[in-house]
Amino acid sequence: MTDKNYILCFDTCLEKMYITLSTDNSIIESETVENHDLKYHSAFLISSVGQILNKHNLKPENIQLIGINNGPGSFTGIRACTTTARVMAQQLDVKAVGVSSLEIITKAYEDTKHPSKPVLTALDARKNMAYLYLNNEIKGAVAIDKIKEIIENGDFEILTDDKLQPVLGGTSYQKLHLPLGEKLAELTIQKSKTEDCDWRKLKPLYIQPPPMG
Image 1 (cartoon, rainbow, N blue to C red):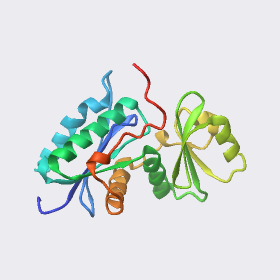
Image 2 (cartoon, one colour):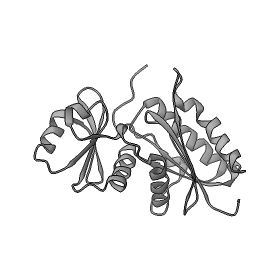
Image 3 (cartoon, rainbow, N blue to C red):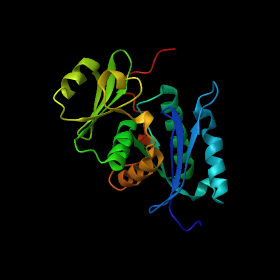
C-alpha cells in the first residue's frame, strides 16, 4: 500500500473531531470522534490518527500531505490542530495546508444540497457578531444586525449554526450530516496544487483575538 500518495486531514476546531485518510483519488477512511466527557476532543487526536494508520498498515512516514481546519472555531481546537500539523509536517518533511471551517462547511453544503441561490454562511462569533463567508471569501467577524441587512432581500441561502439559526433563519449545518472530513480532504488536495503549502506558513486563523488567560 505504500506506493500511493497518502493525505492525512484532521479537524479539532468544531464540535466534533474529523480525521480523514485518503489518496489523490479516493477516501480510504473518514472518522468522526465526538467528545463525551470534559476533555477537549483534541486530546484524542494523536491516538486516533495512530489507530487509523495502524488499521491500514501505514506509518507516519507514508503520509505525503497534511490538511487541517485552521479556524475559526474553538481557540483550543485551532491551536491544537495547527500545532500538531506543523510538528508532523516538519518531522515528515511534507506540505501542510490550512482550510477555514467557513469554506469547508460552505462547500460541503453546496455539493450536498445544490442550493438554487448563492450561500451565505454565518457562524457564531459571540458578542452579537458572526464569522461571515460570502462570495467565496471570508468577510471577517461581522455584526449580526449587518448580516440581517444583507439577507433581508432574500438573495442568499442562509447556512449557519444552532446558535444563530433562530436569529438569522436558514439552515444550521449542525442539523445536517455534511461530509466535512471528505470535503477537507478534497480542498486540501486542490490547494496543495496551487498554493505555497510550506508548513512554516501554516497559521491559526484567529479572526478575533483569542481570549486572555
